[in-house]
Image (tube, rainbow, N blue to C red; front, side):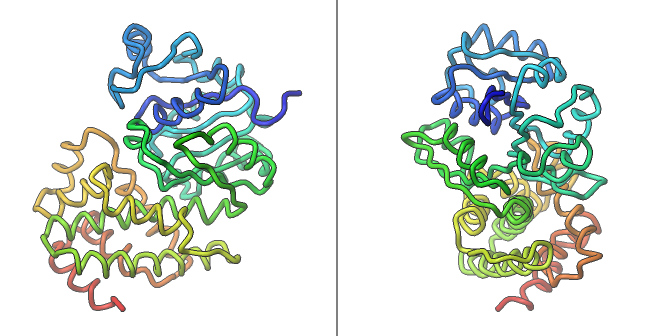
Length: 332
């Protein structure tokens, strides 16, 4: 039996999948790569780069085994690195008939499974019988675009088995990519979900031209809100100022590369939710995360005024001006 992680498959064809594939190929001899569309694969092979995402990144395609068959890719791989948008992940899983219970599953998706309202790392354990010690999570702070530009980038790999986390981190670590490990699987997962919610909030106030002072107050209260939620959903010792929590929140809330910030900015400038979603070229996962976490928190009852304010704006059509002013009254 191969040592973990063995042959790795990248599952997904977007910018984050492309960035992670480029990182893995610096340390792995070959990778498998599942993409949904055959025409995209053929164009990728011809151009030696992803024709739709991070198009400046060139690949050695002789080291990539492409397939549009999710079962063929899963069967040929020891570890599956999930990098599809969370709203569509169940659609991909519906096609999966290959037994993956003995494989490693690494979740790089910053989202919750819609409808089930569970983290993807937990979903694969429950649905496919994956060993919890081999259900890992990868988080930032790390934008795909900066990986493509070969700028210093930072990742955290979470696993209940620290040896598995260390082994997968070694597959990512390199000159400009620095990977650290953690055992806070649930905390890292939910932090990755929540930071997208708060990035939408930051984008909304940016679009409303509330200014840097107000945004700083919003983000400082957001990290407190995240900490309160994590303490209830997964009580354990953690340092909320660590890069995987605060760092990932900051980069997503402020960066021009943040699709969630950009989506929120359109809302703050007066776009309807429908118009903003139509204009986005990529999925703003925070939009779906807002509803999922709102529903989860109905049972937990954590004080989350920022989450609720964004939910009101996106799903109850409350005016941003009213929702943000009400939210601001809770800031400390």
